[in-house]
Image 1 (cartoon, rainbow, N blue to C red):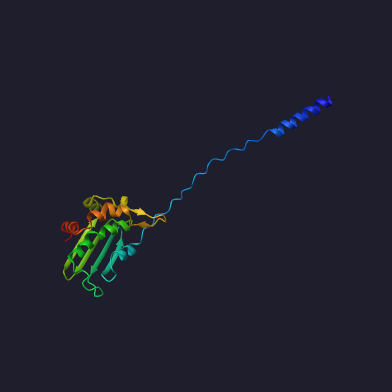
Image 2 (tube, helix red, strand yellow):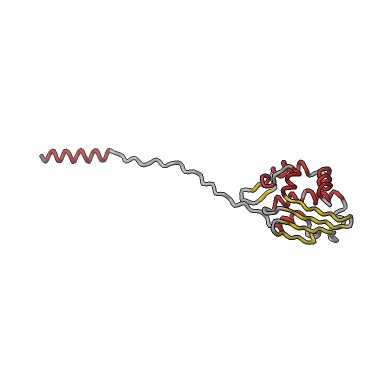
Length: 176
């Protein structure tokens, strides 16, 4: 009987040593895509990137309304010599500011210069309707999350509307 027991133990040991434990196959790791926080410039930075500080007489941003007062500049003589320069400020820069300032819903822009006084009061919705654009959908962000002026801005807006005739039409309709 001892030899049966010995044979049994031997068979058991051999069978255990021949069986390989199957390790679970590791599943391919999915690449973790970290959402980068989207960042917008401050309203002050947006204004300073659009206008020379020498012509900005005052500015304020409160409850979604951006108010800007522009005037003459002794530092930049002849800044407004071209009437189209005023039109560009009144028709293109508000779109750029809506693009850059996240919570901006309306703008009041006043230009008081030797050639005259110009006043623009417009909401984001009115501006989007006029140009047939969606500013929120046009926005693009770099890999670092910062707002950039990319292809959407050029292809959906500036290449189409930033010319002398379109600027004049906008001013005629909205500026008082």
